[in-house]
Structures are given as C-alpha cells and as structure tokens.
Length: 530
Length: 79
Image (cartoon, rainbow over all chains, first blue to last red; front, side, top):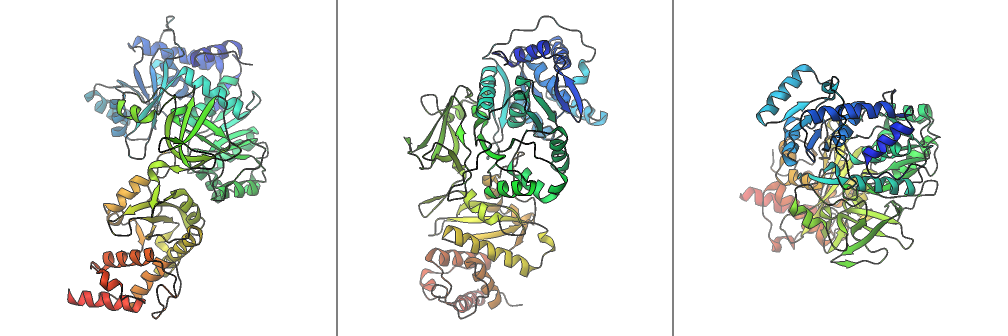
C-alpha cells in the first residue's frame, strides 16, 4: 500500500525512492521510470528557480500529451509555482488571454515547436512581457538543492473549465484536494496496483490528467499514454489489445467513433475491466452497441465528475449491469466515499426521483475559482456544498442520474425539458451525426419552443427530397417520443454545432449563432431554406 | 416564378407536423393531428418564411394547407 502522501511532490519523491526502476508511464512506446521522471522534474524545477520563479506564481503549460508535459507540470510545482495546463492548439491569442486571466509571466511551449513558430510566438509574447520557454531549455541547468517546502494546501494547478458562455474559470486544486480525489476514485472504482491503464485523453484536462496519470503514479500501476488524436481511433484500440489494458476512459463520442471506424473483429479488448464513459452525456445505445460489437459485458460504465470536486464524483460499478431509466438516462452510479450530494430545487432538498440541481460536498471540493470573486459567490451554496449547475436525481437505491445542464434546460409550456432527452431520440435517426436541442422564445404567444438542429452526414450530396424526408422523420420521431412537436428542425452541415474541446455541445453558443443568423450567413443550414 | 407555391406550403406543413404525403384537402387539426401549439408554430414559420404578418382572425379561418396557401398568396399579391 502506498503511504499516506500529503502532496503530489512527496508522492513522486517516494516513487523515485521505492519504485525507482519501475516504469512510471510509456508515451508512444518509450518508457520513463520513476527515477528518471523525478530527476528531470528536479532539473526543470531548478531551471525555473534559477529563472526567479516566485512561490505561487502561475506558469502556463501549453503542451500536448508527451513525456515532457510531466516534467513541466511537476517541475513548476517542485519549484513552488502553480501549473496551468492548457489546450496547446488553442491559438496564440487564446493562450495569451489565459496568461492574462491568471497573471502568468511564463508559458511553456513544446520543445519541438518549429523554429519559425517559436520566434514568432516569442516576438508576440515579448510585447506582453511574457517569456516563452521549453523543457529543452533546462537541459544544461544545475541542480538546485534548495527547493521550497510544498504543503498540502498549496495549489497544485488551475483547471480551466470552458463554460458554455465562453468565460473560462480557473478551478484551484490543492495537493490535498487531488490526493483526496485520487483516493476516492481508487476506492470507488476498485482500482489496484495491478491495473493497466491505456489513455489518449488529453493530459491538459482533468480526467486525462488526474484519473489516467495521477492515479497510476499513486499506485505505481502500469500506464500507457497515447497522443490525443481523434482523427484516428485505431491506435487506442490497438494499444488496449497490445498492453492487455484493464482500464480505459473516454467520452461517449470516442466510443461511437470506434463503432463507426473500427472493425471489432480486429481487436481483442477482452482484458478490459473498465471502459469508463464520462465527460459528456452517456448514451445507453453506445454502451449496448459497443459491448455487443467488441464482445464485452458490463465493462462500459458511466461516470460523473467535475473540476470543482477535483474530478471524480461517481461511477457505475463495473461487472454489474447498467441501469437505464424510463427516459433513457444511464445511471452514473453510486457516490465515491466521502462525497455528499444533495438534489436542490428552489433552495429545497428534493426527495428520491425528483430532479433538481446537484450540490456536492467533499474534501476534494475546490476552494473556488482563481481570482474570480463573482463566480465564487455563485458557486458556493451552504454547509460546504457547491452548486454544480448540473441537473439530476437520485433513485430510491441511491444511484445518480444526470439529466442535463441547468442553464441549457428548455421550459416549454411550464414543463422542464432536458435537451439530452430530445437529442437521444434525434441522434438515432439515420444520416444524423448528432443533434442539439435548444429553447427559443421568439416573443409569440407560443412562448419558449424547442428548436432542433442536426448535423447530417454527407448532407451536401443529398437531394432536397432526401433532406426533407430526414427532417420530417425528425419531427415525427420527436413527436412519438415527447408527445409534442418541435417548433423548428434544421439540418446542418457537419461540424456546424459548436462543441467545447472535450466534445460537449455549446447550446448557448448554438442559440446565439442561430438567432444572430450566423448559421444562415455562413451557409451552414442545409434544410429548410428558411 | 410565383412567390409561393402550393407545394411549398405542403412541404412546410409536412415538416412542421412530421407527416408524409400531406394532401391539399387534409385538415390540419382533424386529419393531421395538429395541436394548437403546432398551428401557432406553423403560422410563425410561414410568417418568417414569406415575411408577412397573419392576424388572429385570419388564423381562425385556416383549416387546410390550401387555405393557408390562399392566404399567403393573397398577402404577397397585395404587398
């Protein structure tokens, strides 16, 4: 059993001492031992201290999945700074905007960034008083023996959450938060040191970073990291087979992509104990189809989590049949140990089976958003609970179900409708890639009505009659399921519905794009013409 | 090219109600199962599509897609 670490730094130092030769992780088949990892973390930390890094100073880590990510991420913390991992392909302007948000003066760029791009990046950064450095720069550094002491309540990193309105908020996660949630997930997911992890999830995002890299480091379990590339699903499935993985995780769409692009008979995924489906709405159909295609049983389980509670909150118990309610919602299971959860509506606590906003209290709860008093005031409710913004309910057996996002909810004729319930129905229609439902009030007597947008596969090649047929089918299926009809249905070209970088539909942005006629002007609507 | 055709209106009705092969004489409520919200949404769609305004009193006289077509045609010709 690992000892009771109080910081991630202590955990890595312990691993370097007692599991020195053990492989910490492989990236693209190259392995790094705990001793090597620790040595390079210290080297990079020394480099940062020599550059004058101050305690608590934020440093942006704009790196993709790579070995050097870990050196940068932990090197910053070793030197007393706060890491801010960031989607590396966000674009220069966006990276600078994050630097401004968290007042960072240093950005870590990939070591293999082409010289031309690096020069350009540095020139732009200079004007903003920001330095661009890379892990490679630390190669000739001299070891610093005097690293600052890191305490459990020190912030390890800021997890920026996208937010559907485009105002990113930096969730502050301390070492204590992270270690608590790591332990909660290990207990709740029944993870042991014998687990074999395979992941392509981005390490600049919480599920990929905490569940898929910190948990294996904590246990010194086998961990294989792949580049994040959804253009090609095969390396992921091939790695599961090659390494005989027992634990993988991905959002629903990655499993759907596998069903579409991979030939199941080519892969043996039978070693999997857990294929966690989380980070976006889980579809019952994906679970059934994936397990059937790949010959698995009770392996794909739904989970729920959010950055404000560090990451993991609940997961369905692997090895037991999933629970799906009458609305087609897949249960995300029972709560992890030491997580308290209430369902709240109009300040009142709801009974089992009643839908309301999910409020969470856990030792893994973040202290709030970095430098954001307004949002912090909205986040915290009372008695240590924070309001998640997610709507859900708990059934009589204590299992949690997620219904949707509070602010995306549609209120039609006094009835609350979750976009997801509609999207599940529409997504099942052939030729539809996926759909998004929003509520629109055009000011008429009919009040807020449901508008449905569906991306069509190869829609540009279809005749108007074909498109009309799909659109009619959408209204008809909608009616058969919901008992009323949508006000409008629109067929869109592929990639027209805005998504966050981790695949969540941005309903509010879609609504904005529709109402300000951007969809029309950018020629994204295939049908109808009005 | 006429500004509105009977076929266009039929297509709008089909799409709005999720019905195939709607015939000119089909009654929106009795034959096609339209509910009041559907009629309101249908009118809103037609108003937006043809850039016209339809009064409450006029809505009351629409029973079939032919009625709707005639009303839209009249409004466009007057415009």
